[in-house]
Amino acid sequence: MQRETLYRYRDIISDFDAFMQAIKSERIVTVRWNPHKVTRAELIEELEECFASVEEVEWYKHAFRLGKVEKPGKTLAHALGHYYIQEESAMLAALVLNPEKDSYVLDMCAAPGGKTTQLSALMENTGTIVANDKSIPRLKSLVANVSRLACLNVVVTWNDASKLATKERFDYILVDAPCTAEGNLQEKITLMPRKTRENLSRLQKALLRKACELVKPKGTIVYCTCTFAPEENERVVSSVVQECDLKVLPLKLKLPHEKGLESFGSEGYCSEMKNTMRVYPHHLNSGGAYIAKLKKRG
Amino acid sequence: MQSLRKEVEEYFASFGVPKSAFAGKEFVRVGNSIWLVAKGLKKPQEFNVQTSGLRIMHIVKWGLKPTSFALQLLAKHINKRICEVDEKELLNLIEGKPLARKMERGYVALKFKGKIIGCALSTGKKIYSQLPKLLMQSFKELLQ
Image (cartoon, rainbow over the protein chains, first blue to last red):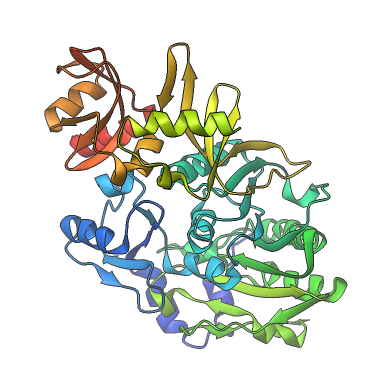
């Protein structure tokens, strides 16, 4: 059977030509400052020594664009954990969750640790972040990054998050769900088989339901993926929001994006989906992302 | 618990690190390692915990050994027991060759290009790398 392509999304992306052009072009490398190890000024100095172009990201003072760089990790500053290489689109979820200092946070699918280490920075190395993953090889990269960036508030755990049986209740939960990662496609436009998408959709629902169980009343959940498929985004959130006592909060980030979908093909989603966010590669010259911010009613 | 804090603070004082560098943080001993964690860090129940915070010391038979990550974290405070190396010397250390250097015996902080990069051992006349494998690999890639 012939595999679907990105043209599947022609009707839901308002500037599809720009979208396709961004998919086919080389992306700009961005890095995120690690405040646990150096000051912002020190990092700027280090980056300017190593790279021809260092541009501050206007919507996030922790992030810098380096242009089209081949090996952004081949510097002493990177080895010493002074920065983390992360696409702009991948920096959004932690910012949307925005945990307070000293809070109790669960990152359900944390490896390799980009969002975990960003949460640690946002919380100024206070409180507790339980950074969980079920894959041992990925756990190694998580531990390595947490150590390199000196995150003192991170507890790395190894569990299947969808089956967690615990009495712990968290102030904030990040569900960075495993997905078909269509947002990372470059040049290739062929999508994963439909069956993979459907299987992932079931797992994503299980993860979000579990997050709903483990968050405290009035606690916050951020659900995100790096894919465009509505079956892995709006379908998951819409379904769990209706099952559980969750409210979909509007997002306040001021950057180019499109609203979440209220329907796709013959499938309808709840109207609150317009409060969720779709970021396409042409918006930030970065990967794709879907983000929903949910609050458990008290 | 208080004696563990005192012991660790005194050890790092030999590198010039003030006690204030550890304010708002706690030390936890797990087996033969000491971990630096955020104050009040919770241990989640019913989770398979792999690590908590940052491993800053190993307890070895002759005393305490700082980790390279600890020395990097405390870099801005370190002003004693520093062994400065150039590219050739660092590459030799990574390749397992000792560096001829007269220094006080014990663990020292390796400094490269003005930055504290990790731990080494001084025997009095020679310096041996104590950098972890992953870090050595990163430095090796940088130097080649």
